[in-house]
Amino acid sequence: MTGAISNTAMVLAAGLGTRMRPMTLTKPKPLQMVGGRTMLDHALDRLVAAEIERAVVNTFYLAEQIEEHLKTRKDIEIIISRETELLDTGGGIVNALPHFGGKPFFSLNADLPWMDTRTPALPRMRERWDADKMDALLLLMRTDKARGFEPHGDFAMAPDGRVWRKGVNPPRPYVWISAQILTPELFVNPPTKKFSNNHVWDKAEARGRLFGVEHDGTCFHVGTPQDWEVANELLISGKGWGV
Figure 1 (cartoon, rainbow, N blue to C red):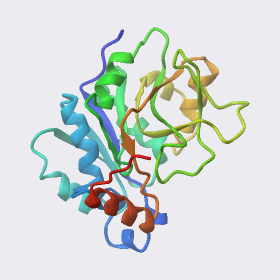
Figure 2: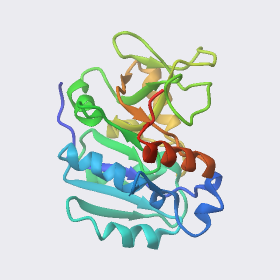
Figure 3: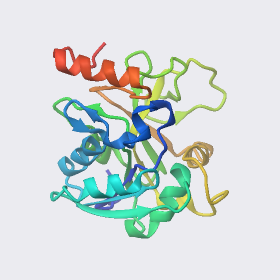
């Protein structure tokens, strides 16, 4: 490992959750319960376990509910980044950049829970991080093992961990599952005020500095009410999310 990682992380929680309607008409997606915890708390729990001290949580849709819920967390300092307009994932991070002290930082989605094995994902990512050759490090899972995802996949990955998607036709062998380490430099000169993290991934890939770590646990992309039901049923049954 080379390069210190910020003790402040980003948690993206501002989205509208439209595919989860009608569930999200009155409660935002990050506050939906999976396995007895909100999906937002699952993300924060992973950061606490990785000894991250602070989390910047961006809010927009039903922001008051999320902000009120976050007051219950006493094990990690919470910084609210309330958006007056939806900035998408990349724009939301740009809004929060001053909090990371110019260091690479973890960013997690608040609505895509995963389960670790004995070796948690975030410490594995921290150990793998190499600022000399990386601008971004993504937590990936084999497309055929990831639950709730479309079969087309997101990325290909070389044996050395380098990741790319340009020129690779679907189905691609890996999907991204919520967690990443990003350098602040990726967000210099953003294309617009509102933009997706796809922009910074493309930038890192073009530089040959986009890398991945394969997750050795399980995950479930809770994209619809039906996904939510299945994800919880599997956990309650004790079967879990393995394939």
